[in-house]
Length: 127
Image 1 (cartoon, rainbow, N blue to C red):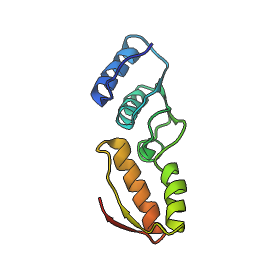
Image 2: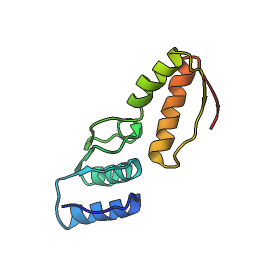
Image 3: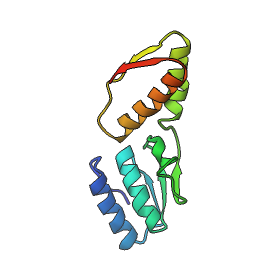
Image 4: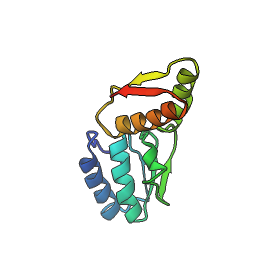
């Protein structure tokens, strides 16, 4: 089965609830944005259903929003700045300014990158 959640967490949750309650699905996967992934993982976990997030990148999926039924497969907003921001700061890029996408992925990526930059002695001038 598949559905167009239109990148909206409420639509995705509604569809997931329908699949779980009416269609009796065992697993929901893909979940191609962080807000959708976080919302569906929370709902599915409460009902004992496995989620496999492959397109969601918010590190929250494997940190504070982690569940015993949630699998976060692929990249995340912890791994991206750990490699990239580290390399930039260590090669002289010490002053940063963020232009952040206003959704779960963007905010998570900024927070994780900011942490790496500051830990390595860089400075965030603003956002």
